[in-house]
Amino acid sequence: MTILVTNDDGVHSEGLRALADALRPFGELIVVAPMQEASAIGHALTLRRPLRLETIGPGVYGVDGTPTDCVNIGVSTVLGRLPDLVVSGINKGWNLGDDITYSGTVSGAFEGALLGVPAVAVSLQRPPGAYDFSEAARASARVVEAVVQRRLPARTFLNVNVPTGRPKGFRVTVQGRRNHVTTVSERLDPRGQAYFWIEEGENLWESHDRSDYQAVMEGYISVTPLHPDMTAHSVLPAVEELSLEMLTEVQ
Ligand code: MN
Image 1 (cartoon, rainbow, N blue to C red):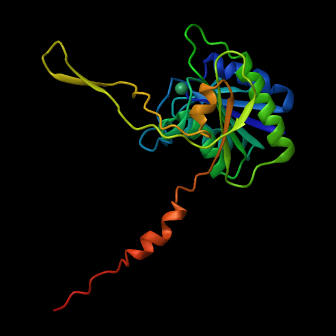
Image 2: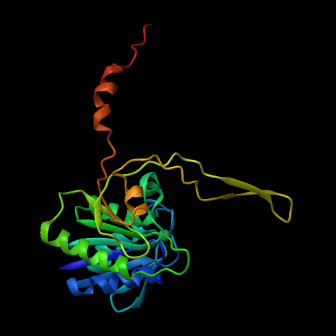
């Protein structure tokens, strides 16, 4: 079995190393990750400049691009075929609820799902002090083992979020909702020109017993099944009701 590992914190991130070490027993491991940190880069694909592939070590490669670039270069160039699994992480900081749309970590797994490969994204809650990836690495191995044994439906992937400390267990969750308040600070540079700094949004989470946020807050490892299909299926009838048609021009 071949596993393609990526992340958005960069190829030198300790979370990536912890994940790779945890997954090595499963088979052939190829790591292709961004040369520089690409957190909050979402599902971006680099189309307007060339990309370089650098060998970091045996089976470990860096790309000066995004996690989505890494998965594609990993598949097309490094492997020359699809892997059996794509795993992205372990991210420094959780990727919960609506915030997953910004996440490069989740997007790495998203790209795997788009390519028809089972995929898992793993993120770890930010601790008060230094990061300890041991429990998240253990959780990653457990999830990968289960996915390999039981498979996932086509074009789906798992978003795994691990709490700090000793997890109480796994909980299957839904994507939570954060009422979005992003703070933008405005300052002046030394030449008197304004610049802006986007700060992390406030934690205004809607309460939901089954949400990913709730699970992590209660000390559980959250496992949310996701799919790239963003169609609001339940809203199809309401849009049909709009009776959209082109107005015919009357001459
Ligand atoms: Mn990150």
